[in-house]
Amino acid sequence: MPEGTQVDETLVSIKNLSFSRGTRKIFDSISLDFQRGKITAIMGPSGTGKTTLLKLIGGQLKPDQGSVIVDQNNVHQLSLKSLYQLRKRMGMLFQSGALLTDMNVYDNIAFPLREHTALSEAMIRSLVLMKLQAVGLRGARNLMPNELSGGMARRVALARAIALDPMMIMYDEPFTGQDPISLGVLVELIKKLNTILGLTSIIVSHDVQETASIADYIYVISGGHVVGQGTPEEIENSNSEWVRQFMHGNADGPVPFHYPAKDYIEDLLSYL
Amino acid sequence: MIQLTRQLGRFTLQSLAKLGRGSLFLGHTLSGLTDILLRPGLLIRQLYFVGVLTFLIIVISGLFVGMVLGLQGYYTLSDFGAEESLGVMVAASLVRELGPVVAALLFAGRAGSALTAEIGLMKATEQLSGMEMMAVDPVKRIIAPRFFAGFISLPILAALFSAVGILGGEMVGVGLLGVDEGSFWSQMQANLDFYDDIMNGVIKSIVFGFVTSWIALFEGYDAIPTSEGVSRATTRTVVNSAFAVLGLDFLLTAMMFGDD
Ligand SMILES: Nc1ncnc2c1ncn2[C@@H]1O[C@H](COP(=O)(O)OP(=O)(O)O)[C@@H](O)[C@H]1O
Ligand SMILES: [Mg+2]
Image (cartoon, rainbow over all chains, first blue to last red; front, side, top):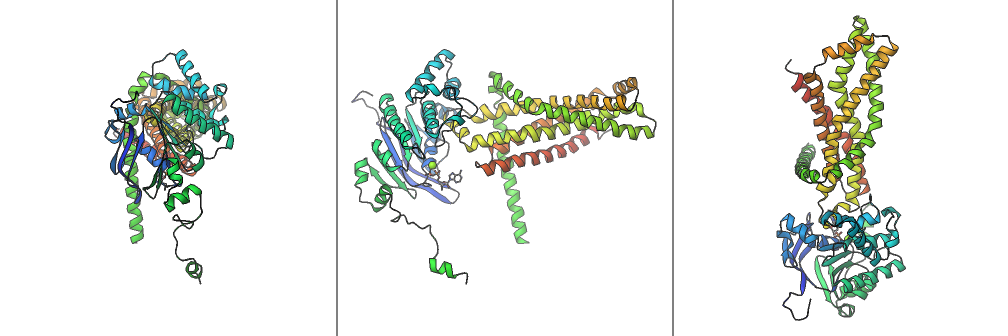
């Protein structure tokens, strides 16, 4: 985008979104904005609904209330057809990679191209090899998904997510369960893709250090609310007890170590 | 008592909800027919897989069932001095009943359970979700070709089962027990009716193909996405398919042969 044009700088905007699973409220009227071309991180402990939030943005789940606007489209009011059109411009990297297990690496990356374009096999080949080169796995094109390490599977999934040149990409826990080398590779890749391709990136994670090192802006969510937001420095120096506990990994704090239970002594004695 | 009523009520509601989800799923799957007509390759690939999975078991079982029919039929018929009718007896039992029913049960146990496990695992590993996010409808791309492949192949498998079974009956009846070969075949030709016997068998196997494919794919799609959930769904496919096939067989038989 050239500077100074009249373009809304917010690509994704979540307004007063509420969502429940059964009787449990996962989100209670939360609002978040994601700027174009930036890396925005959503952090929070496991089970707070980070994956759920990505599925709400992608239109796989419907909110009880509130709206999600992606590039001026209200995701949950689109027809199925327009939603699918929009999704072609949204890449998503699932926690597990979600590679198709009956195809090799090459065919996995070619899959969205074959489904959505009428390109010749020669063109598809060039594109697939370019994407694989970008994630450093051009030599692994003939491997099957079960032959890949966790880090490699995520890089293949990343290559697939950028196959259709999307405007944005959502990463679900990209760093979880990676060895230090794969972790470094993934951090570099996410940053590189963001700058080179001008992507808007949304990273959902509970890995504090890695995420803070590449994010431009961070939201910390817990208990269905945004409990902190700001640049990594602002979050680091936050004076919210809760944010501090999360960022520094203290065992006890506003989030208690113990799952809610009745009094310990009483519980022990209640059998007698 | 109240407990029992409550459980019964919950069970009924859950079953109804599942039936509703299943019907929507079926509608969605059938709407994938247009996509399949545009890309027949997807269907042919699945037909090949179903064929590979079930061909051998159908041929072997068909042979043995036919041989048993030959033996049993011979002992019963020879009491009345009617051994020449062995051909009709074997062929009618196979074409009308055993072909469609046994082929459907074998199909559910072999191909159906494999389909449930495949779809359930794709769900558990987020492959279906991943496809949705790539703007590919997994029901049309993954489920529909498998559904139509099952639906098309069961009538063919049932016909194969009957054909091999008749050969098995002939091997035992003519080969071992000395029934006259000419009357074995000519009695069969003279007494089997194309419409009443053969077409009715074909209609049955078309219905069974539809129902067993639907059950197998829906159980996979509706499975709880964990390893335990998938294994339970696989069991349900076999059990529910067996009930559905046997129940429908009775209904269809009553409808087809009830008026004569
Ligand atoms: N399909 C589902 N059905 C019911 N509850 C679910 C389902 N998926 C997730 N949940 C619940 O929703 C909550 C949020 O899940 P999730 O978004 O996966 O959390 P996170 O990604 O932050 O770890 C969890 O408590 C989880 O148990
Ligand atoms: Mg998650």
